[in-house]
Length: 173
Image (cartoon, rainbow, N blue to C red; front, side):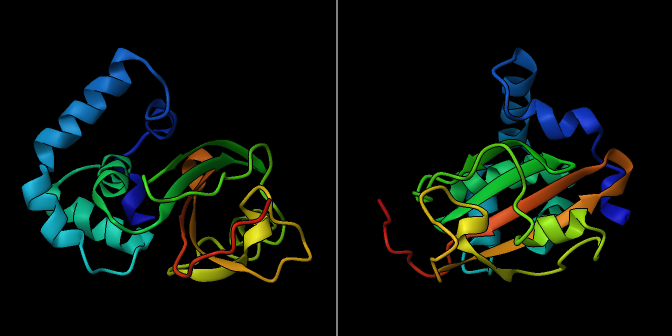
């Protein structure tokens, strides 16, 4: 796919650790995409991986660097999830995203689960998924939804997912 060439397999995982390299990535992202330039181009837009792609292209930055800046500056309730096979490697939430993202495995009822089952390679837009497929504290009886945009990065065998709480969810204990 066209947008894969700017990131390596390590790029997808380095963002979530506490290494100097991860700190350098974040610092570089801020230099390339400062708040005063980034926010006006992202505010008021529907969250999606397509929006992240568009922002990455306009700033000449990687998709991961752009996704992190998006999480940092958006007022939207979004989270980013990187998975490999059916295993969730890590997730990162924007400050207003309150639920806990499930750890461990991709749920088969999520779009990412359908991608792993070979049904398609990407959602190409935000689609509805059951909240229980992604969020802790929601069980399969819950009828609440979350939005999801997922893409398989075939070359690395990893899936990138952007989650969005478009509608408020009832806080479930």
